[in-house]
Image (cartoon, rainbow, N blue to C red; front, top):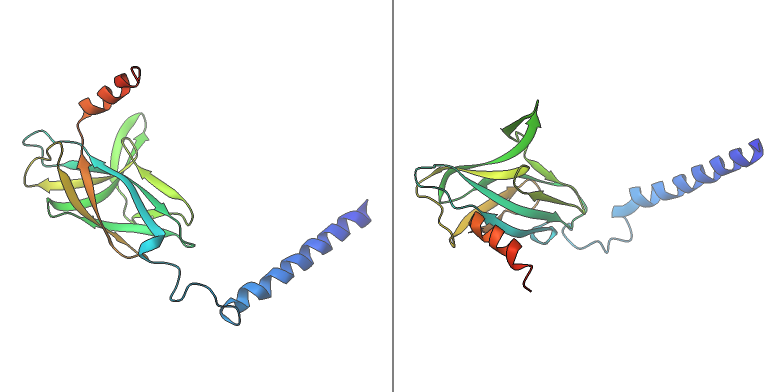
Amino acid sequence: MNQLKIWTAAALLSSALFCMPAMAGDHGHHHHHHPGHSQGQNSIQVNQPWSRPTPPGTPVGVGYLVITNSGDQDVTLIAAESPRAGRVSIHETRMHQGMMRMQPLKDGLTVPAGGSVELKPHSYHLMLEQLAQPLVEGEAIPVRLDFDVAEAMDIELKVRSLDNDTAIDHSGMHH
């Protein structure tokens, strides 16, 4: 029994040792790794960017989207800006002692390598602060997303009203 345990341990160890030099010597011989880093514009993808219409007199809007990172290193959304808003911050809504609390993410929002993060109601979202004009349904709000290691990206938040959401739900029954 013990013999077997020792043997598997030895086998694991030697396979671990095999992997190490190959990784360390990665930048040596076989560098058919895409030239100039696999990071960049193409590793980050944004889907379903949308926002809610804001009532007149409300200086704050929201931005929701799905960020997908197909690269091989974590990418952090560190800032965002929009010509429509005085400033854009990255927020997280979390339950705190039964209360909904919104707080800015000081270090930004990290999208893990090969993963995606959804900014959605009651979760992460962009806050569009100091709006000059209300966000109107059907409008597209330009937003620029700044990442730490990927290139900045320009997206447009499509403004959709709540009523549309419920209409979509009900119409599902007739199709």
